[in-house]
Length: 490
Ligand SMILES: CC(=O)N[C@H]1[C@@H](OP(=O)(O)OP(=O)(O)OC[C@H]2O[C@@H](n3ccc(=O)[nH]c3=O)[C@H](O)[C@@H]2O)O[C@H](CO)[C@@H](O)[C@@H]1O[C@H](C)C(=O)N[C@@H](C)C(=O)N[C@H](CCC(=O)O)C(=O)O
Ligand SMILES: Nc1ncnc2c1ncn2[C@@H]1O[C@H](COP(=O)(O)OP(=O)(O)OP(=O)(O)O)[C@@H](O)[C@H]1O
Ligand SMILES: N[C@H](CCC[C@H](N)C(=O)O)C(=O)O
Ligand SMILES: [Mg+2]
Image (cartoon, rainbow, N blue to C red):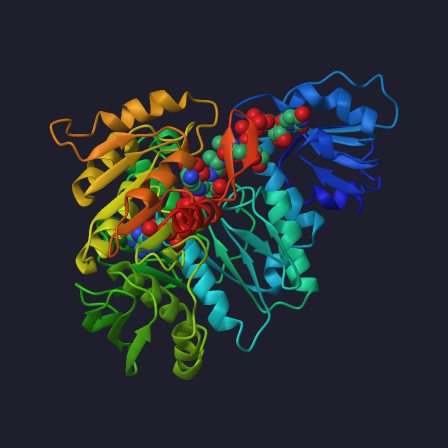
């Protein structure tokens, strides 16, 4: 594509060199640059992308988007475009390069602390009954024809526009997408055209990045100023109520869902069972009995969000029920590891205080034996949640095993010490086993029939990040191995 077209509608400070030249690709990482690329230099949190100009040149970059004065004028046949903020400009460049693909597909964006992956997956399952549907989120990116593992929950703008373009080419009608607070603040979704936005809930998380809960809410709120057709807000959540009052004067229509407060989509006559929930759904036009083969009060909230989106998209209640009643849930979320030892082994992705509390209180309600919890906290992430998660897990478990999650560039022992500062040391119901595999093994070995082992924090992840290295590691596989070992000994 012509460079002049790629930078259309961009606020440019200065162009040095020829704007009428053909560009073969756009890249924010020098290692991806090809012959004819435009390389976008981003001042990152770790390193300044302007440092890789030489490498990009050697790989064949023909144009540079920069926010600093750089000295490559001596090189012939190179174009340098200077803007105020390369990270934000990258989003416009990306949507220009892929010809605004988000205009050609209905994108449903889901934001909030917990429930995004669950909601987007259930939504894909229902919408997928009669349509081709793409998906972008924590577990995978599905372009309608094939899926790849995700690196982040919401990818960088260039990748995002590329995948959405692929979905359009693959004739997807919808894209069910998780929108993280990081992506909203860092402009990854700036030039995405969302039809519907959903707010799930807001509880403390990522406060290393957003500094306080108000800033965190404001980040999430950005989504609802971008949507074209409807916003759907959980009105039982206090921050949901604040968001609703902040967006009520927008042209985009607002809908609410909830259990406790009067809302457009409500659940009444609720029944919670150990492996399912049922309720009467009240919508603006009909009532219907809903059964879902997934447990927990949060399943009611997640499915109300899903149903609200489907209603707005004119999906019939029969299709909605078909999708919900036949769901096998989401991998790594309350995933049951089958065994014939008489114990329940559950792998779950709870990695926030609220999620951990929800999951443990859900299993506690129906447990006839002991609850044995294995969990740790990730490194290079919000430290404030560590003692709180320690406290919650001790309170809701009979036996707690504190272990390592993804330590990344932190010392796992230090992370465990921070979790320990929320632990009541007078109680003797906890132990520390840093090695996650050994921790899982111990939990399964001490479990007796009717006991429940909860392995929390890593869910679907098939890796453990230590330093900058991703080692293969899958809680579910390890749990199966430990179950087999225990069976062989018995
Ligand atoms: C804090 C954050 O979000 N950082 C993201 C950001 O990194 P950064 O801008 O700091 O990058 P950097 O490492 O300083 O490098 C600066 C620039 O130099 C470039 N570079 C670097 C090395 C090199 O050899 N050549 C080169 O060109 C980099 O590609 C980059 O453009 O941009 C990168 C490229 O898109 C992301 O991979 C990176 O996500 C990191 C891995 C991350 O961990 N992000 C997490 C916190 C995150 O985004 N999480 C959210 C929410 C999760 C949830 O709640 O579900 C998510 O959406 O996943
Ligand atoms: N509506 C909800 N409210 C509170 N907790 C929930 C809710 N839905 C799911 N959970 C809990 O949160 C965990 C993560 O759920 P899910 O992956 O759907 O959230 P997410 O918002 O996608 O998280 P992430 O920010 O990591 O992408 C689940 O394993 C479960 O323990
Ligand atoms: N999307 C979340 C996932 C956390 C999962 C947990 N296993 C960890 O590594 O902290 C994050 O990147 O903060
Ligand atoms: Mg997710």
